[in-house]
Image 1 (cartoon, rainbow, N blue to C red):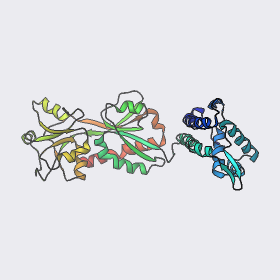
Image 2 (cartoon, one colour):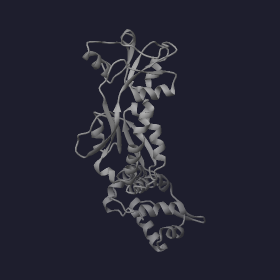
Image 3 (cartoon, rainbow, N blue to C red):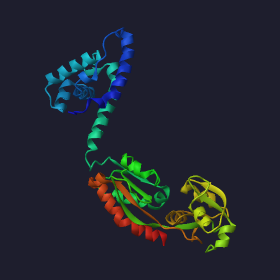
Image 4 (cartoon, one colour):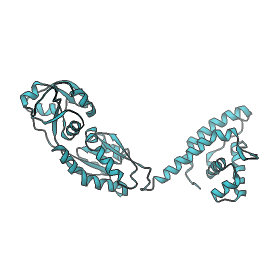
Length: 336
């Protein structure tokens, strides 16, 4: 039988109160005190589900490994709590009342949620979801590889990629919004472990059907308009680097999404300068061409991070070890 904390069924009893209020109004028994969840043995709900499914106290007793008398007593207790017969004897067994039909889905779903919560303690639970926070440039470059790695890890279940950035990722890890993170930048917060996997650089994307070139000079770069990737839409790292040498660029369009870059560059003479791994990944999947940028950018490390104690989770640890081993080589191959 399932044993759980009483608060786990708060939502169920909210619905129960709503359903029973309608029934009480019909029966004119609203002055009777409502049952208090603290006074109820929640194992009775498991008996209710089993009897409902089996339509027989005898079969329910066999499934629950109880005596038929015990099941009958628990049904009687349920009837007292709900103030409803719940089951009527017929030639075909115990037939649920209309009220039993109404509460069945709430009881079933509540017990299912509790059962799922118990399985979360099992690191090998096949239905678990691993949440990885990462910026969308790394999602473009690495997500398909990570998904393949996870498929080979027993108990990894599904992978959920969730967008973040270096400013938000630490808090998200500490509040358990993510299991792992893959971003640029470092981590200084207590309680977070991290591992550098490489350093990022920048490259340019162009449409070769419009600009049929194999290299970009600085004068050419400054003469053409740009598609800017920026959170603010006003300036980005490219503008900071240009400003440091007394230069500016002309921006036609700005976006916050890497995935929008191909649609904004295609068919134009614009240039878009983004992290090289994202530029290479986009060029590989589209007809755009990736070229070296004509200016030097400061190198920025990227890597994975996790909560300190999450490393004790076998699945998380195996995924960390796999990423540590595989991603540097994938990055190097992608950016060559």
